[in-house]
Length: 264
Ligand code: IPD
Image (cartoon, rainbow, N blue to C red; front, top):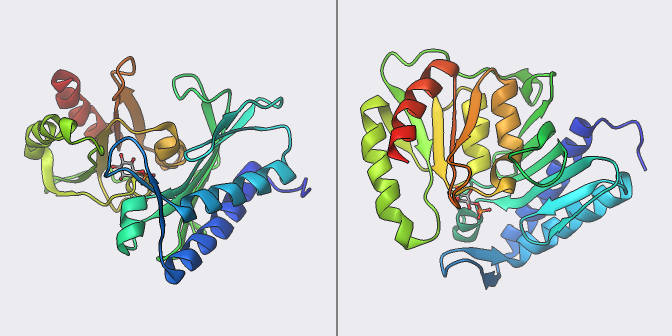
């Protein structure tokens, strides 16, 4: 056990190691393990192997902590800290050989419910791009040693990102939302990894991001990155099965929420 490692350092170490494993497995070829909610919602053998590595590393370093992972589910701990993990966020990109995928590792205080937890530490690692984004509560957000800040102004319109769920039945509604948001936009990106979308908002590479129906592991780390980079992250309509996550600098966040709140 490495008792000296902070939660942030541990998240960063594990995300990097896990990401390197994902990259290696991608180079060897991808095998599909299963489909999940719909035929478009896939899991690869690498998702499972990478999550198993993360889970094993965490239980060796912090045996009393809880765990919630995309592929292997959850277990309560005894310390009050829970790790929320997406081993490969952007699995469809991964399967197609697109570089925009990431490993997302977050430590939160409290249980697995995003409505009540308090994020403590986060790491998002993009193995192909070899970029590591980290944050600690009250300690700022960082990319490879450089402090991050969200954008404050969007004079030419906002560079926004969004995503769509895997269920075709939700596409029309999501496209209607896009139409309503476009008057605020300079342009719109669909990167394919929510953890990277949020990391990029934190880094000022995107002005804002919104998406319905994200799972806790998709945004646990990225939301802390945005908050520690001076931005605002909220979830609207949390009683529904597809809450809307909105992340941006304060001024843009208010404008996005003004539209998205009405839309819901
Ligand atoms: C997905 C990605 C994608 C988002 C989906 C997520 P996964 O995560 O973050 O960008 O639009 O909603 O489910 O399934 O690749 O881990």
